[in-house]
Length: 83
Image 1 (cartoon, one colour):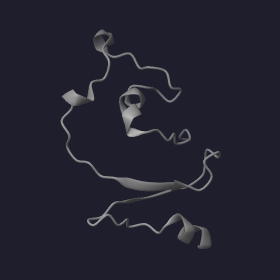
Image 2 (cartoon, rainbow, N blue to C red):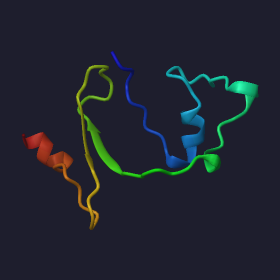
Image 3 (spheres, helix red, strand yellow):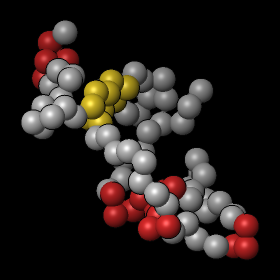
């Protein structure tokens, strides 16, 4: 079973990309830190995700990506509550 999803700001991405599921820093060859400026950006897609019950490990996650014009291809959270 996958661990619960953690929410973090983009400013903390470098810390999270180098951490294992317990938050411990992964050891890289030579002990170097991850430098995201050295990584080529292949594609960037923004997702909007909702976790039905964030405290439950088996709670469904519903995601959709951002379309041109800023709209999402998933219903809003309030529409999901009515479903």
